[in-house]
Amino acid sequence: MATQTRRYHHGDLRAALLTRAEETLRERGPAALSLRELARDLGVSHAAPSRHFKDKQALLDALALTGFGRLAASMAASRESAGETFAERLATMSRAYVDFATANAELLDLMYSIKHDPQASEALVTASQQWAEQLVELIGAGQRRGEVREGPLERVGLPIFATLHGYASLAVSGMLPADAVEHGLADVIAHMLRGCAPDQAAAPLVP
Amino acid sequence: MATQTRRYHHGDLRAALLTRAEETLRERGPAALSLRELARDLGVSHAAPSRHFKDKQALLDALALTGFGRLAASMAASRESAGETFAERLATMSRAYVDFATANAELLDLMYSIKHDPQASEALVTASQQWAEQLVELIGAGQRRGEVREGPLERVGLPIFATLHGYASLAVSGMLPADAVEHGLADVIAHMLRGCAPDQAAAPLVP
DNA sequence: ACCTGAACACCGTTCAAGT
DNA sequence: ACCTGAACACCGTTCAAGT
Image (cartoon, rainbow over the protein chains, first blue to last red):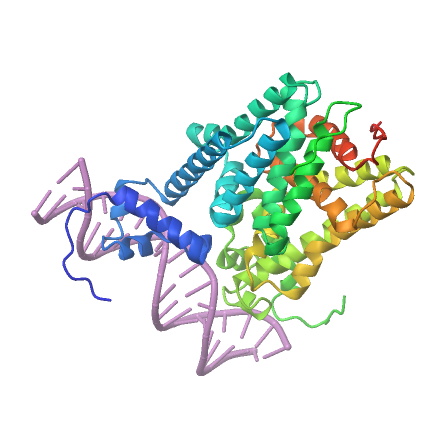
């Protein structure tokens, strides 16, 4: 498709690049992401993106950063609608995480793959830990209510953290049939509750 | 190995490509993997690899396949040295999985990232499920011993599966300090045991 | 059968020059 | 300040031709 009028200055090239990159990632996967194609799609020269991202990795990092931001926001939002008990609130938060993961499968992969990179920016590393902190707060509240067993927050939280992340990861990588994701999540939540219930007390079941 | 005594320029290019590719993956990450560089390293023309792998993806698939094979083998080997009780055997298998993951971080990523691809070969998909089946067998044996609660194997197994996979995944992606991996694993195993203990019975602790 | 060498259509990155 | 256009050094893939 031949371009017609091309504005010299793009209105907000940086934001446009990120938006388009996420679309491409979602629709055609990470291998199909190319700076040159992005520039072409936005009607800009192939060198223009370098004004906003020093290289391709910088664009991927920025994309991951927005992902972590949206994940944390949707988990925070889920707290508003959550119930009173630890079981209800854990279930709500778990659903928020798994929903985000299935709705943003390729992005989630990008978000976590970036972290092997020792070059990863400070901002990215802290952003990646933000959703875990919401879970940690939840567990602390559960302990205060006597619904979660005693112990250091990280030690009680780590297995919950791993379970949730692992389940989302299985769902995202297609190891779970798509129609089994919602159903399996209930079993996973029940497992997490049993695992962190106070001794000698049956964990409350999810509704 | 069916060897031809006669060779043109290289003895076993296919195997050499896979070996070298894994070294590069481990040392310089997936982005640094290039067929042309591989060919250069092995002293062969850049078109030679296409005789053995129809394209780059085919080489990555083959690499992932060897990975799943080795993972399944090392989990199977861990069964030999495992104890009698479900708790001991679960702990041994979990360690085998996490050890493989940390020793082959980039490869593990490749193994799972390949599966979003609907093009993934039949062989790859079945190989990716093989280690899970060993875990399923273990759980079945645990149920027969009365050490794991009743229920369909997939439903009881899925949370264990998710937890183990998630923990390895956290360790691999660097979200866990490297020196915390071994220590955290004990908590994770204890959590799994509590989560699948029969009702009204305390789960045995790992040694 | 296995490999070479050239060719093609892409990349990411850099930089002097334009507006 | 923001972008262009050319240049450079890479890619993956294909294919006629060599051995």
